[in-house]
Image: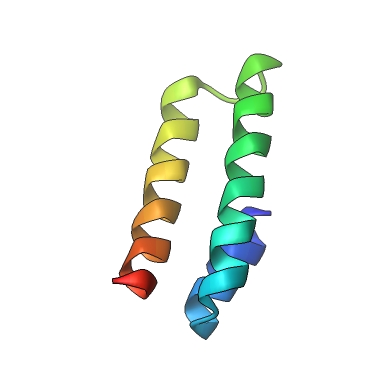
Length: 58
């Protein structure tokens, strides 16, 4: 989901990028709750994704 969001952002597709960003955010949160990744790493990934999508919108 993160890759899809990045690719949509790179292609300039705002709608798909925001949709995939939401999905990626949920998947990262699930990974944190299961102990797969650290919460700070998930926060960094979500933040970077939000910046890329935000740059498209505004």
